[in-house]
Image 1 (cartoon, rainbow, N blue to C red):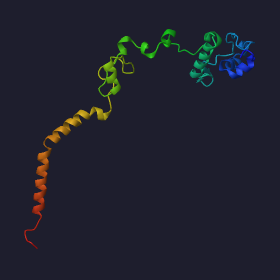
Image 2 (image 1 turned 180 degrees about the horizontal axis):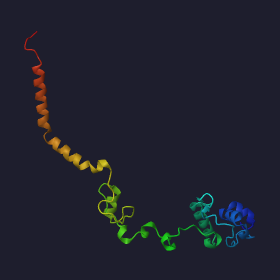
Image 3 (image 1 turned 90 degrees about the vertical axis):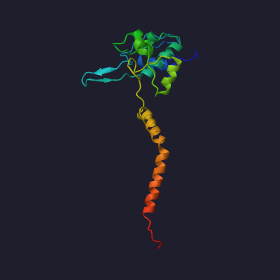
Length: 191
């Protein structure tokens, strides 16, 4: 592949086409040489604010596309921070905290959740003694309230048990009452 020119490589590879489009001055003369640091007029990875409309325009490249470009730079053996523009980071999030997975960003006291008997996956995690993270971390009581039918199931079953206990006697009394009402309506005369 070393025999192709830098322009033809830019047509075939996403990283080279990005560099050729956004920062042509940093495109090297030989195809797979290390490109110069990004020197485009503006950072296409950052959102921009329109001062007249007081609204923000989203970045030219989505976060997914930025990640693909960073991965392509690393696969070719380049330093992604030098070749590509700086990524968009929130101002209040430190770099170390942004790189950590969501479970590690929570306090240690808020990481564990108590499982709910209504949520099957939660019971499985309790049985395996695995930590649970999420929006209900740190709350007292069951983290998930369950569906309405799940919450009313015990009351419904106890009511059904009490109704079934005297069911045979009630059925027999009803049959006798129906037979008496039927015989009461019959005439005593044979015609």
